[in-house]
Length: 206
Length: 206
DNA sequence: CTTTGTGAATTCGTTCACAGCA
DNA sequence: TGCTGTGAACGAATTCACAAAG
Image 1 (cartoon, helix red, strand yellow):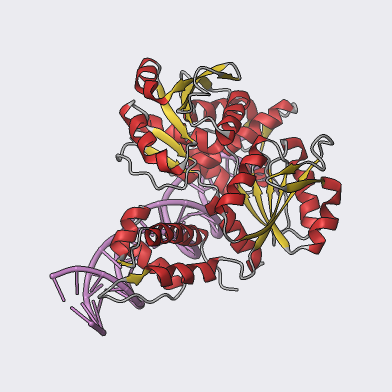
Image 2 (image 1 turned 90 degrees about the vertical axis):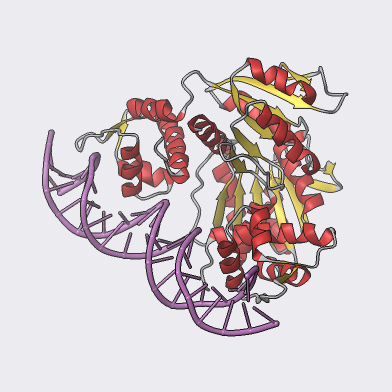
């Protein structure tokens, strides 16, 4: 499997979002310069990113928005849609759920898990909250490969372990804990304190 | 001003967190190997990061945890503590507030802003929510340089503009909008869909 | 002329290899 | 022998410079 740099993937996702917006406003094509300007990258960067997915533009008309958007989509998206599990239905978990529920067109299913007995069986956005002990049973019957962890730090590693046993291959980790996972599991660190301190640092440098 | 790579800063922040945890468990010193193992980087990486802040370890005892933690702190932290503004007190804004309120020792003040008249004047965690129109007045009298934007996308650019006028130099942007800002303002993109799609992509590759 | 596509050059970040030291 | 500190080597990612095409 050819290794695509994470940064390239991130940018492609951003390009697609921009293309989607532009299409909404009735635009039909654009040049790398314009896309670069909006996205905040250099035009060469944009062109070489698009080379990765093998998309061909024309010097005369640039890139066809509709076409390029679908091309990026078929490169990035899971063909049959993606199912995700959110573990920990506190404020943050609920925020994530709403976000995903309304903003992610490619999501085919969402499962919610918690340990709080007051929450088990209740619904958010029409989705029932399961006990975390049922995680293997429920995940085994869907094809859910991605999970979001929004539990208290002390439970993070335990939850990660269970998720991986249940077949999860990608984790968004909203806890500050550095998770120990097998090599074939992709973890994206979503800790919120690190970027805050980082921004605070650079805000002071200017 | 010497330019320090963002990645180095991020790792330093992570090191500090780990050191803090270890100190809590009564450890007094450690070697780069151990710190690297916990953080998930290479020992050389750790050592060269620490070189950046000019911290000296000893081959015999490695690094003094207490000392190193304060050294990183005085390098990363604002000397007099940092004040932040959170604009948009919805679910996500509240999550951020709680997170910051309890987990950020170096925060000296937090100001909350919204436009919803039902929220103005009410309090969260004992902090009063102001109308966004008062933003310049309130920010001008504290030394707040950092802001978190958790408003609906359509208001993001407008809010960013006001924040910058009010003297903000660092922004955590939780909206999917690519903000246009002057060069001396540092923006960290916190969009939640991009990492989700990214994880989904890599989960499928394995 | 303006744009895309792309090998070459450059910059940036990480790792290697080893000197210096307890 | 273990470790730290660091210049040199390497690798990844971005930009440059220019050929090709309308």
